[in-house]
Image 1 (cartoon, rainbow, N blue to C red):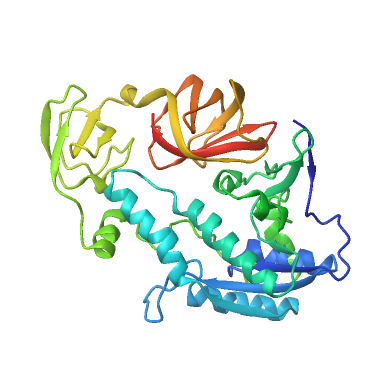
Image 2 (image 1 turned 45 degrees about the horizontal axis):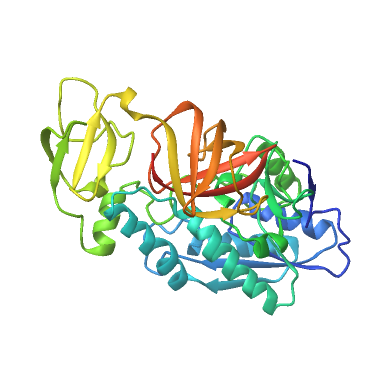
Length: 368
């Protein structure tokens, strides 16, 4: 696959307006500064997405603290700054879906939903009202075109931090109007650049957790958000033999070993969740290995829907190295067969497929 850059820093910047999603972090702040130096008419926009005015720990993405950091950055760079309230959209498109997926025994990736439906869809719509042709973010990836198909796709970043996995669901229209100026910069270089330009967030720590579940207690969040934790049921082995009681399937995820609340005299892992019978299957580490998966709701980037088998590399989690595989389309779903077994194929997570460091397509894992 041969790909060429689009929407990058090499284009004529004169009189071009770009809306930068200023999150209050060092990455988006550096992206805005780079674009301003290149001569773009940069407009900063910060999106309020979750925390309410009375939140005690208001430090997450789109929080009041983030808004203040973004405002200070915009003042240093010398660009206009707007704050938009997208909390209703975020709750509907991301948080409600997150809770319902956990109650159904799946493990969702809320950042992927947020990227597609809030950060890009809503931000691009607002940018167009301001007369801006592009939006820009501080993500570590590159928008490019596949020269064989002419379609937009995303290339993995060579700088050590790559976020292409979480961006696989963006549409062709969204990619056509997106810039990611940090795509090949190492993180240390980004922080050094921000410090040289006196950006007040140069040494601000990166956000590591889901912004609306900062304590990592997904089950408690789901219970508080929905009023339900789901019914208690049985732990079983792969033959269906009951081993004990579980506290509701939303408390568990594939591959989990700690916090099961059951002692079997040997290490036990969650190998399957069966929402139809409200059972959590426990087994050995070897029981987590799978060579096949099926993914629904596919999004096609570098290639359109295809016939036959295609060789690719695939990832089933953000921090995984892509593994060799064969993919095909069957009944509107992506089917994948890996050359080597993969551990803990998890329904609800994304399966993303690449060729030559560019995203071919991806979907939500239905089963492994």
